[in-house]
Image 1 (tube, rainbow, N blue to C red):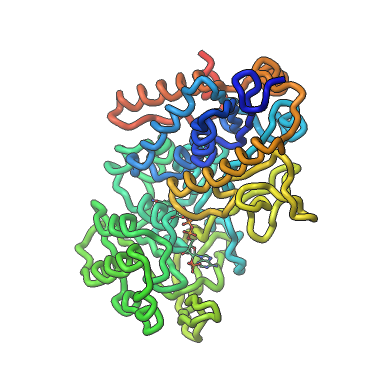
Image 2 (cartoon, helix red, strand yellow):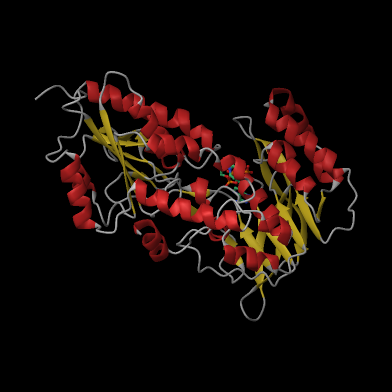
Length: 465
Ligand code: NAP
């Protein structure tokens, strides 16, 4: 047989997870000069693009234009897409090993972190990740119910997801109507009674996880004022000193927060309160077990041995009579069948992308990872490009050294027949493009970017027509 990486014996790679990390890995693999690679991408949902479709805010369409590059990748002749095929159930690790020299897991972070405080499970206390998935029309979440009859909402955390959630709750029906948000969510949010949104940061403006563009946007909403207490916008001496070595984003975040704190409310219908140095300690329920309020403790910052500024509770508390709580303190990875996992960190056990054995910590031949399930839920979409490239470099190095799995049925025909046996309703990229064209056409008629189909059975019907 000719050497691996030649036209007659290409490297066969399976990518599990069709989000940004998966597409960046595919593109990097197929760009390799003088080494022939065939890439098959598996995705649990019928639709590709992961968090670009189901995480990026529906009023941030420009960010979604990255899918044009993913589309170009998908149109390469050595790329194949198997949508609606779930790893671990439809296709197991052993099934994939029959067809591929290498398998790379790019499944992202699908669940949320918990606050670990009493009352977190009350009705009306929701993970922000579910709310985001719901308003973006994720088929697993389209039946969720959020009690938008309440007037006061708390969003815990000051990362960009918290900012997205707070902004979405504050948009007018006209602003919502211009987006590709799921129709049911536009309807529910347009009728919502929410008047006050309290975003709660446990540290100060110089430690905020949000980025300047996102925070600035909160001051530009059509019918929502922003209120920041000047005493919370002012930096404590430790934070002030830390600015000397801070990156540009941090400095800009602080400037914007301080500018916004100087504003007076202008009488708009809704108000966003951005708070710093407060932590929820307890969520209280009413007689029906529904969120009725939360206790907050005021924090001060102290410097750890490593030089980071951490929050520490003071003895000052206050009470916030909110009726809904969105917990937005970070996503978390979910273990995959047969793949070593670090429970505490919520990531696949790996060394720069090579999956390692739980006991020996030695690389497991043929298995790799990239994206949030490799490094944790941090960074913007583009951060995944170098992250995936780092893994792919190692994959190519291993392939050239012959450290690969030995698939017994690597041909496209054998693979496709096997996938069909396990999941007859798999979706090809051409199928997805039909669904995509349908959604865009529906959107055009309503002057919107697209109208999403949110039910898997409907997706399959349209995609296969
Ligand atoms: P994140 O950026 O990690 O922010 C998590 C926030 O939760 C931080 O403010 C953190 O505070 C806080 N937190 C953690 N544990 C807490 C606790 N026990 N009590 C109170 N607060 C707590 O996570 P994310 O907002 O989910 O975003 C995930 C990634 O996606 C980020 O990299 C983000 O930038 C990115 N993203 C980008 C965009 C965009 O570019 N527009 C939009 C959405 C998401 P500490 O800092 O004190 O830990």
